[in-house]
Amino acid sequence: MTREDFNFMFDAELYSEIRKTAAFLHESVNQMYGDNPYVYHLDNVAEFAVKFGHLVCESKTDIAKIIFGAYFHDVIEDTRQTYNDVFKLAKKIFTYDDDAKHAAEIVYALTNEKGRNRAERENDKYFEGLRAVKFASYVKMCDRLANINYSKTEGEERMFKCYKKESPDFLRRILYRTPENEIPQEMLDFMQELLNDNKAQ
Image (cartoon, rainbow, N blue to C red):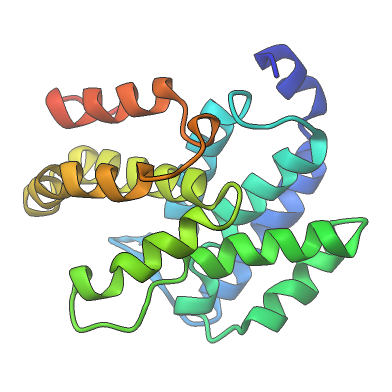
């Protein structure tokens, strides 16, 4: 899909509806992202989903799925929602149940495993789950780009160093057996730029 096609198919009203619902769910548990409401992080993830979306999407429905994934990727983990809750919300967005189910599966795949630390929460089973659902690895990459960029923007040196240290293993696991068009090279190059330079994007 060309960037022009993506822009033409992009539904701003639907985007706003998805954003509003996800923001409300995180606000309902008073979740913050640093000093900002949690939707600040979700907006950042969605911005990267849009930035590279033309490279992975083939239809208007695909666009809606990556936006839904970007905004809802933490709701099961953080807002006491279940998979069925997310599926019901997706059915309000998507015309067909199969598309709603796929969107809910993206969110479910992005939900961390139970664990005492980052390594346990994002274990091999977690990455296997990402790779099993189309667009889940893509949205995870958007999430990682948002976190890396935020750590630079806000001068969170400890987290930036953590993301940089994790980067080789993260990329190895997320790319293993992932279809080539799921995570475009432009996205990988951009991540490397973020990790190598000292400027936020």
